[in-house]
Image (cartoon, rainbow, N blue to C red):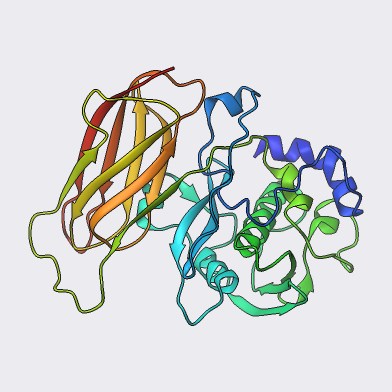
Length: 315
């Protein structure tokens, strides 16, 4: 949070005036997997540019929450009755899931905030929320993070290019955060808010066999089995994880741990039934043995199930 406050004075005035700094890279509508994992290399200032993952399939979306005060996306299934941008926004307002709570995910958007209005005009979404953080004072950084979460979530699918944010019908944006007038708040793009984060991250993908409607409920002992990678396997670039989960359904938490420190993670936030798969990029500075841990959190009174496998990262 403190770093964000220091950035306000140096960066917000330029952003609020609409000026474009040539050093700011517009990641574009396809950059939906950035901030999925913050690598030690990125934290050290090294270049960690990586390929952007594919656009999610219809009915799937990426929703931006916070982890240790830094924005990170997590995957969501969206109702077919809604467009992906609107469904993503509604999922954002629901807040982090149980699995995400375990991994310290949070949100700068108040828990009791409601969606008062959503409309689209010329690929610009107009989003009206009932409550947002104050734009002045000690919670100024929360306002920036809330704007980032909203804009990056709504634009993740590529269908929306910019977002006009309102609070209870009133304009809400960078002008107010910079100390200027909030009467005129232009729509915000990803490029307008790219200064909020201070590290480039590595993308990845995950998914599972989703329990089908009408299937008999699982009534046995929960279990997780890792089929790949095998014990002691040497891996490079990314860990290709495959396995089987048996439970009543719920999210899977995947952690990569070295010396008791988590160095990467993934969440499969669906009601998995049977096989699951995930690709976890390896930070460039990481080498040596790591533990791959897969956890199926307990649901509906069931105990949690987990499995782990030790592999060796080839530096």
